[in-house]
Image (cartoon, rainbow, N blue to C red):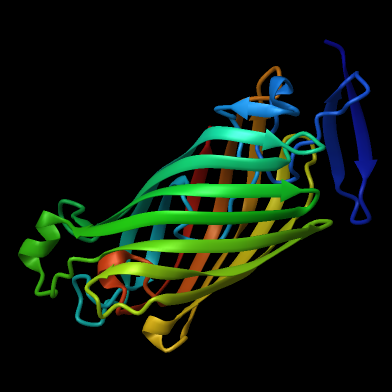
Length: 302
């Protein structure tokens, strides 16, 4: 099929390259999404290949596949103060689409998915790069998108486990941490800017002393694509009842590279990001501690 290319110059001089089929209906993918296959443009779609709620750039626990090198203060790891500790943080995460009820434009509508993720941290200062902690997440998100507005409602389970080598050398008090949670997030895109906000309610908690409520908000900025490249950045803020509403601040900025295959899908994304974090730990077994770090990471999406 013949394809046409439009090139638009934004106010900042960023060149945007958008591709669409030479038919009356253009495949209009979400601005920060992963593209829409032509056969999935409208109607009811079984096992859709794309997400319609755009991934959160700066949320350290949003399901994704990544590898990061972090250096900072982790109080329970090796040194008494935890300062100057280097860890490797890795994740494996993916969404599997079950069904989408398409909206008036491609990439819109109501979609049901299943999501799974593993987040693990390794002590790179230890001789054998010991596994410190691993969080396992499985969930069922229901997402909605219409124009620049999107909504995520997700029920998910998380359980957390310490690594054997770390337990043998450490005096940490082990917590059998697991919970189920209901998460609700609303997102609005305004040109290159995206704002989002919402919260969570934990409805089963072990230990039961873990408090139930969490508030979540953030902002993202994208330059628009110049060919296959765009600049992006985000700030993510969480406050929890568990920590007397103390703030956990996460920031990420970098470059995204995308390579679409013929037909619009799959789109392979690589994000190279600088990272910073300060606040209560997002890592399950260390949820009572305050940490801080800076680092660099690579995020992958197939």
